[in-house]
Length: 217
Length: 280
Image 1 (tube, rainbow over the protein chains, first blue to last red):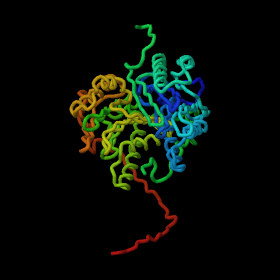
Image 2: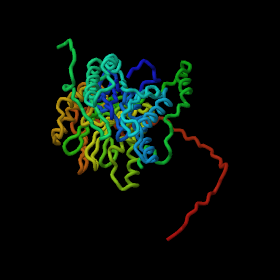
Image 3: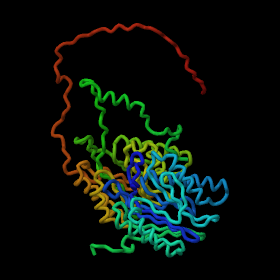
Image 4: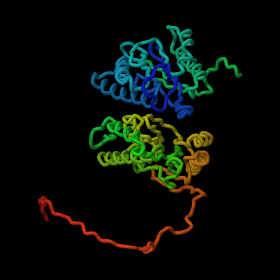
C-alpha cells in the first residue's frame, strides 16, 4: 500500500490492496481483494484479507503483510481478554481503539492500515478507519493502494439509505473497478456481511466479478 | 503453552551494540581493512503440496556461497516434530537454527502436555519469533504436517507474514516451480500424482535457476507416518572422484627434528571438595 507517506522501512511482503467497508442500517459489509505481492511477483493470489477480531467484528488488512497480520492477532487476543472481563460481546469502537493504539504507538516501525468494521448491540453497524493512528467513524471507508482509483466512484455512488443488498453490490463494484486498474490488487473478491443475525462470508471468483468499460474488448 | 522461548523471556531482537565497531573495522586503513564473512545462502527451490492423505514436501540440495556450490547434498527439509517437517530457503544458518529452536520448543511442549504438536502451533511460534527480529533472520519457510485437525501447508516469511495454501513454492527458483504447480495441481490427488508433481516442480526450479541444483529430496507426511526420500531423484551430472586423494603416512620426508623443553612453574594449587551424597 502506498499512501504517499513514508513509514520507516517497508517490511517484506506488501499487500498492495483494495479494502472497503460500508455501513447499512443494521450491519456492515466489508470487502477486499486477494493479492499479496513481493516486488513484481505475486506471492499469494488467494489471500483472505478480512480477518475476524471477534464474532461480529472484522478488520480489513492492507500494507505490510507481516505487520497487518500481527496487529490483527494481537488485537484479537486483547479483545478476547476484554470480552471475558466485561462478560459481554465487545463494542466495535473498543476493537477500533485497540487497533488505533497499536498503530499510533508504533507508527514509525509499522506500515499497515486496518479498517475495523462490525456490529454491536449499542450502535449497530459501524465502520472505523485507523490510518496512521487516527480513529474516525465513517459511513464507509476505503483503503489500500487500489483505493485511490475508486475515490471518485465511491463518492459519486454512495447513498446513505442503501439496503444490505445494495451495499453488497456497491462493495463488489468498487472492488472490481479498483482491481482492474491497480496492478497491486487482483485475484478474487472476499465479501463479509455482518448483522445482528450473524456473519455471511462470500468469495466471488475473478471471472464472476462485474465488468465495466474495457478498451481491449 | 508452546512459546518461542521456553527457558527465559524473549528479548526484543538483535543487539546492535557492535555495529559501530564493525564499521570501524571494515573501513580501517588499507592493510587493516577486515571484511565481514558473507553468509551462506541456499539459493533454492522448495515446494509443498497437500494431497488426499497428507502433505508432500520437496526441495533441491544445492547450497551456494556466491558463485561456488558450497554443499551439493544439503538437507533443506528439516525435522520439526514426528508429524511436522519444514523446508527452508534463504540464509542457510538462519533456516537451520530457526527450525532447530522450533523443534526443541515443540518437543518440550509435547512432553509437558502429552500431545503431538499441531502445525498451527509451529506456525504461531515461527511468526512470533521472525516478526520480533524484524526481517533480520533471513528464513523463508514452508511448513507441512498432519495433525488431529487434518493436513496443512503453511508458509512463513522472514518478516513474519503467514499464508495457508494448498500448494506452494519458495526460494529463488519459486517462479518456474510455481508455473508447474499452477498448471497441474488438483485437489485430492493421490500419492504418486502428488510426488511426481512436486518432483517436477523442483526439477523446473533446478533447470531454470542458477541457485538450485543437484538432487531432489521428497518428504511425504501422512497420518500413519513420514517417508523421507533422500534423494528421490539424483542429478545425472554427479561427479565421481577418479582417484583417492589420501596420502600414506611417510609420504613427506622428514629433514630435521628439534626438541625444545618448555619450563612450567607451579604457581597455585587449590583443592575443592565435591559433595557426593553416597547412597546405595
